[in-house]
Length: 239
Image 1 (tube, one colour):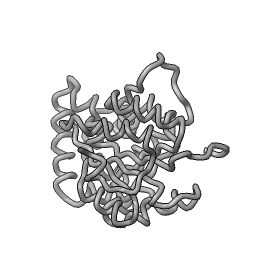
Image 2: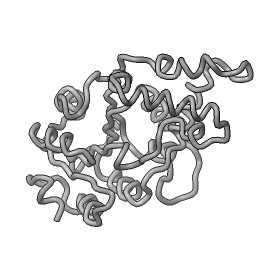
Image 3: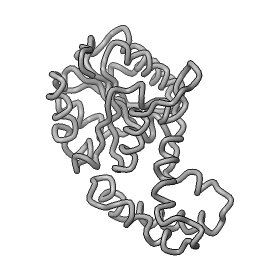
């Protein structure tokens, strides 16, 4: 990021529900091993129905604890870290909204574009692996996390800061903004959750509420290429 000044500040963009809807362990959940698929589905239902998912995404619970009950039942033909390795591989392959990814790719030429996600340390690990080892791909819009990560400047992940976006925007975004000579008035958040958008605006930023079924949403993001960061709220960004 050094040596490049943002002309219009920074665009923070959410992951799940905005850029992608793919689940963790997609290859297992869509795979042919019905027994493993059923065990993993059952375990993930248990994790996301309780407090474990939030703890995992705050960095307080390890992936080993999440998938330990499933991994322990696997036969010897599976390595002990099979599910952990598969999680990283599947994160890298997560499909992205190519229309939005193309706009972000264009925006990244003139300002910072940063992934801002309530997510796990394993997801951040996958993102940084892709950034540090960009794959060769055909020209065009990024189609996966592996393609998109090298286009983006950075990632802010709840597992590193121990807090979610809506809980404390200053704790989540503040260090990154300070480190890059920016504040909330220089920033836009693209997010599908209303509580995240409202918290970001309360902190002084600007938000675009993303709705996949709203034809105006992508238009609001495209206008950032021309308008930059304007002193108005999400309600005026979206018609």
